[in-house]
Structures are given as structure tokens and as C-alpha cells.
Length: 133
Image (tube, rainbow, N blue to C red; front, side):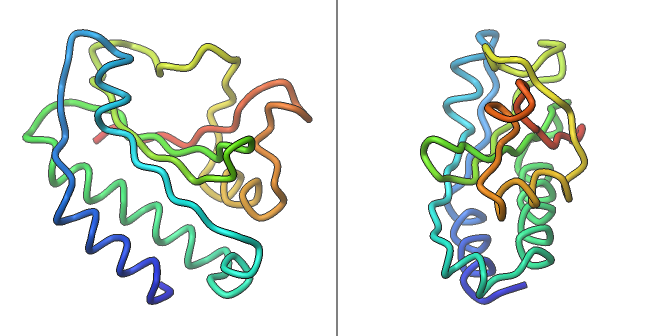
């Protein structure tokens, strides 16, 4: 994993506190972290490094969730130009998005990051990678 992404993961480890709430949007907002980047950084990092970073984020959230049954998810916010991650309780039975979603493999989300394509504008559904933690 690229050194910058490793540093971000270390900072996330120090700062992350996973919260649970009966209100899905509150829970999602409290657990959300955004990562900004530019094209130069993406080229420096490479797809494998971003993939490894997001898997590391999921593992970190699992370690920090206090034994709660949650869903970790990641997506590319095309308008903000950010990689975003969050987690919500599995009990909600859904993810907190108002738009149509396409549950995708991590590699597809990473491809979207590198091609500046979240899926929303080209396929009518946001590509989201999620896993139970």
C-alpha cells in the first residue's frame, strides 16, 4: 500500500469511533469519513493500493464496531471528488442513500474512482461496495 494511504489508515485507527443509532442517517453521518485526492495522487497510488486501502478501512471498522452487526460501505462521490466510507447497523436493512444503488465489487468502485465515474450519471445507479462487519 502506498505510504500516504498507510498514513491515512493509521490516522483513521487513532481517530475512529463507530457509533450506532436507531436513526440510519445520523449513524451514517457520524461514521462517514471522506478522502480527497487528485489525478496525480491516483497515478502515484495505483489501483491495487487504493483497493488495499479500502479493504483496510473495512477491517478497521470491523475492529472498532464494538461487536455490533454493521455494514461497511464505500463509494466514490463524483461531485465532491472524494472516496467515502461509512458503516450502519445491519438492523436497518438498507443503506442510507436517496439515489438508486448498484451493489458492486470493490474493483468496480476503484475503477470508477480512477475514471471519475460513480455510476450515477452514466448508469443511473451509484456503485457501492459493502460488506457485513
